[in-house]
View 1 (cartoon, rainbow, N blue to C red):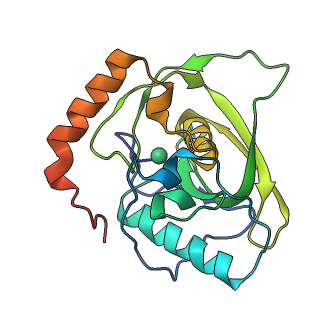
View 2: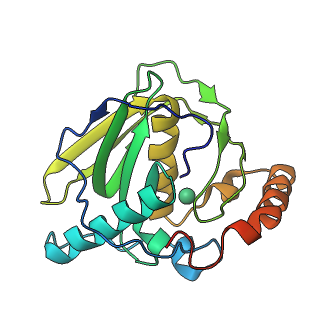
Length: 201
Ligand code: ZN
């Protein structure tokens, strides 16, 4: 998911399960319409060097595209894993990797919808409002198979839900009414020259 309009010069970054691997290679962004984007991803079963190398490439690609989250399918890999480095409502950044993610919408908490704008690195240059719960948690596994859990509000809540959706083969356009979807398409079409096929390499 792209950063959008929220930006902070020197945020505090929390990475409770370890930093994202930073020795990866930037890869071209896979776009909506590619088959890999539209089916549930294969679960991660092996926590090895190949997984770490994939996650390093995902991380490099996310930062090159000025994104706050990226799923493996967005670089063309059919595997249920995503990375993120995203601010919460207070502006603090949370960073991590989640394999085989499960969305947890907490009970016993008033459930409110946040109708802020959302975009997708795989449909670049376009943002429209998308209603989602304003707080979310994700449970899954880290790079060594250890259990991990992240939760948060603000853009982080949106990002976690957006990336979990990717691992299930859902893009946020699937969640929009026809009119909003058309508006999104129009913005994207106008921005196409800014995002050649090899972007963000
Ligand atoms: Zn996306």
